Image (cartoon, rainbow, N blue to C red; front, side, top):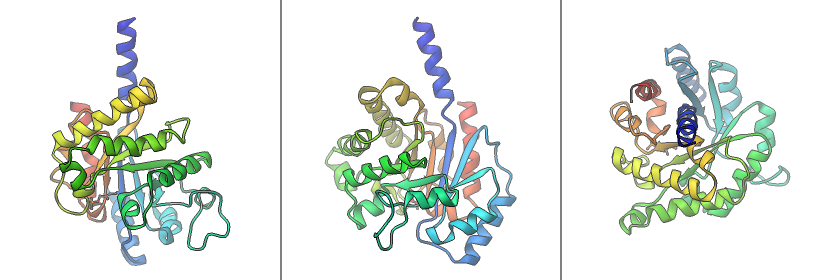
Length: 267
Ligand code: 13P
């Protein structure tokens, strides 16, 4: 029996395909986007069996990127409205993304939580609605420097994850992105040990509060100043299943980050 449990856990762990997301945030012109896609289209990366690559352009460039991007890379929107579309000026609905053939959406990014006041509940409602429409979700959690220094990192990310867990019934289409706010865009990356510690904490939280299956199969990716120089060391951590990359996803070094997926086959 024990052997069976061990084998099952090994199989589900192995099933966590490395995931590299490129969050382009609010950057770029049509020309920049075309150049970036051209670069991505020309590079040789590990096969789709080894790594799942998803890039996230600003809304206005989604159709362009969809038309030009290689078919083995997928696309994510950077946000969507919390419920069915309608009289919500300036919003983009989950239905529209589905209609456009965009499979993924990033929700709960810390820039939206802090700059636009998105609460844990609001983010959780968005995750629930997006999943209900058939989108796959990169759900972001993470603590501020103040919260880390106060020793409340796990409480903060657990509360963010709990809000989501209360609104969803299945996790198959969710990737959890741990992005410490103090590491985003600062060049101050979490150490592999710091990141691993929170990833393990999140997996334990899922194990206790959702299920062992969800805990072992859900991909937990790290974001915050990931670059070509630090990605391999981070990827070596057992519970880091990939990255959500900001600044470096706009540069050629993104390719090196995608290639760090191969570290997993040697750990
Ligand atoms: P940076 O990689 O620029 O720190 O941004 C991380 C991020 O916010 C990805 O969503």
